[in-house]
Amino acid sequence: MEIRKVTLATVGDVVPLFNAYREFYDQQSDLEQAEQFLLERLNKEESAIFLAYIDKQPVGFVQLYPTFSSVAMKKAFILNDLFVIEHARKQGVAQALMEQCYSYCLQKDARYIGLETATDNVRAQKLYEKLGMKIDAGVFHYIKYW
Image (cartoon, rainbow, N blue to C red):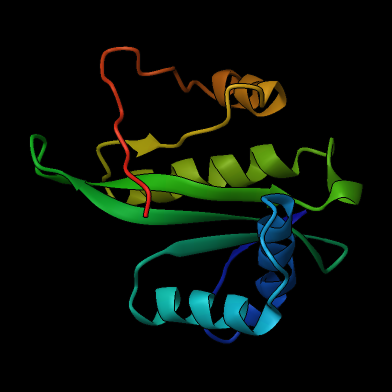
């Protein structure tokens, strides 16, 4: 397995996976818009995307969005998207992608990496806990959707 950071030159490798990820969450397939969205994030340096390859085939990706901790006066990251194609699951791809995120955040001297997951996504929760993440029970997260 190889993990590489996605660049403008390699964004096409992640588009089908990103589209499949969105379809998993009941969104309409739209490869063109998916590519435009990712290109915009990369062009504006609004995300870091890492792609996992097995036998030179893309099989999973993770996308981090930068944010900041005002209290610590440091950068922080939100792990917003993590997806592994079905035939590559249970091969350590998600763990390798998470570990790449940790390494990247440490290189950037980040205060923290955070994520959210569905309460019924027990498989993902086990991975996150295995990798040292904890449920942040000390705060409430509020959200308003439009």
